[in-house]
Length: 496
Image 1 (cartoon, rainbow, N blue to C red):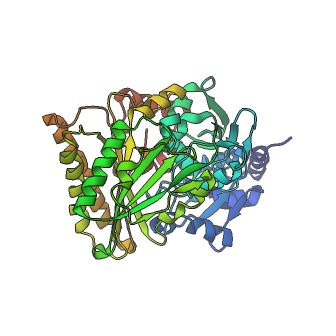
Image 2 (image 1 turned 120 degrees about the vertical axis):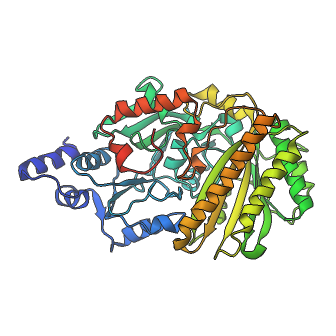
Image 3 (image 1 turned 90 degrees about the vertical axis):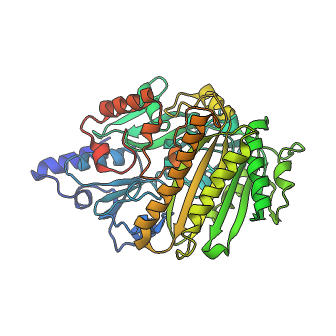
């Protein structure tokens, strides 16, 4: 059977012409779906980003390949020109140029949305066009679940390549820890397999290494048995007393919870002139019966609203998309902090929270502002569960418990992107400065603190925060699979 690329290559050779831009070339000599700026499918896909700043970047065309062979054909054509381009899974990363592009082709994985489950083994072949709510809906009723993120609209591709923090990470590690195999199109347009036994270095590099090694067209995932779960939200109004209770509760949960099925996210949010000033907690238990006392420190703080209930994981994912602030510019940054001791908990947790409130105070008049900080436990058990399943670039250890902070600002005026960029840098930069100071004086332990890629801001140097040997390893793998720098120089993302 003649492949798409063989047809494309033959047409190019017969024409005797150098390749023009990718969009017109594909239209002229292939049947790959290419859409223009006035096409409805283009407009719909371009509107489907978490941040309007990404939607404002206009690709010359949007290409919708259906399989690895079509992706390979696109890559080979791109090798014959100098256009910048982007690859989009769910479009949830708000960094401009990461999954969006101005003036070059956008490769959407929307049509590569397969979910093929082996009911006996729980091994699933999943396309990057899937999102967490759609894959959970596909798996509902099978008795199997995947280790995904917490917001249903998140794309599988970006989540898994960044590592992927899950409600189930204490049981199974990162989302990437459960990848058994990648089907990937490399910089030269060849289709390769990366697994523990084939291209093992690339296999490791893809686990927390991001989008600069190739275009993954299939993830082979180990899924896990699951019935109904318990989950939902607790909502609290901000008061100094409530702040103290919840900050202590999330610190204590990180240290003392020994049930791997339980997970929490503790989020504070503020809006214009504090018309919104609340805490929203996400509680999860992988089962219908929640052991007594697991979430007691949170429920005892007196929630204004409690939506927690027994439900399917698919229903939890489908009901989670309310957190996406529609029609806004979104900026996300992160920091990882050591869990403070009980003795130093007030100093550290309340010190960081006061810093966040002080910085967010300065932007409460920004039109449409929603500022948030999420405290996410990163106990030793996540590192242990990840290592039990697979190697990865993150290479977290069990030297201490940690917390991952997600720092978000959403706002309306796109013209204020630069100003808010500086505000976000001050926010996570101030956290980092405090942590380094506390480590120096012994208030916090001096342990490894990688930046979590899925929440990373474009100004943060992800690879510089990895262990030096893993940063060097990622660079060597990148040089090996992409010796000309095809991906490193022509798409966004962190550069290994």
